[in-house]
Length: 464
Image 1 (tube, rainbow, N blue to C red):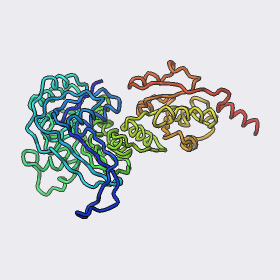
Image 2: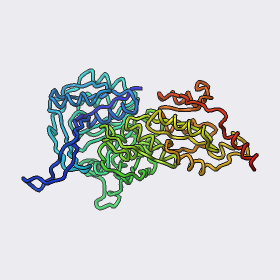
Image 3: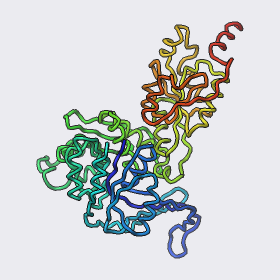
């Protein structure tokens, strides 16, 4: 299904190197640049994230004809770009880092340009969308009247997520969700006009994110407003008047918050497109934005992804899957009871891990094993089975499920590969249809006969 990202693009340049001395001209560090990475920013970053997740993405934007625009076009490889003329230089933001620490950022061509013209191919591309992300970076495109007319007409037909900008236009009426961060939300709310005209002065509710989000919702006439608050998570308000929903963010070590809002908007529109309600979509989007930052953030899109090892609960498994997908990697999953680990298990798990960038084991709970295997099983509790699996170097996370099949578990993880032993026929697996529904595939690894939990349990009885 086609997702259209519409908005302003810019070129992000990352200069990274080592600093061991001060300049003789001034007390500033001298950075010996070791690498230069150029990547698409703004709406281009949202489009690249979605393309890395395997979605069919069209980017509707405007481009200049300068050298920086040429770099941008190369950085947007894999994304269908429908662009009109911007009439202004390409905005470039260059960040300098020394030994992983920010030193300085300098911007070029970032002065607000005139509202650009919108071409018919741009409008046609929007009309073909199954879902839309509006990534406004304050450079005028979202203020174009023709664009706003078609976006408002589409709001009742397809999910639209609008990521606003303080210098940008207000969202059109009826969009599914608007996603300002808390600083932006306070700025929008503090503007003079109808929004605050009836608000009491000095009311302590004026500092409550949920209260501010509700006021923005009324002013923008959107279906929902999701205000993000960094490590504090997010607050969601909806048009039906239910109390604000506070969404906690998973604890994450963040070295660079750049791109968090883009990741959240991209994830949110995907979950809405998949048919999830706005509450569930927002919870998943907050979790995936945190996972994206924990995995290294935008550095993952510049080929600098660091290995991620997350163990334990189902939440960790979901976060790991989000990390790997955000970095453009392959998520591999397998499943079973794993009641007594043996060589057949370890060989199959090792082979599965080689097929991608992480391996998540979907583990039958004690109740599930009991229904499948009988009252005398499992021999080992799900806690012990989880601990033993996580001790293996080729298992990155475990997700326990209570159902008889892992279908619900898989629908949450959405792995690229579902792996079973060679004694299974993947065409007959109940999981095959759902895995293939999002573009994943099922495969097998070699089966090792004469090695099974049942045989091992019988042998132990004889020893006893």
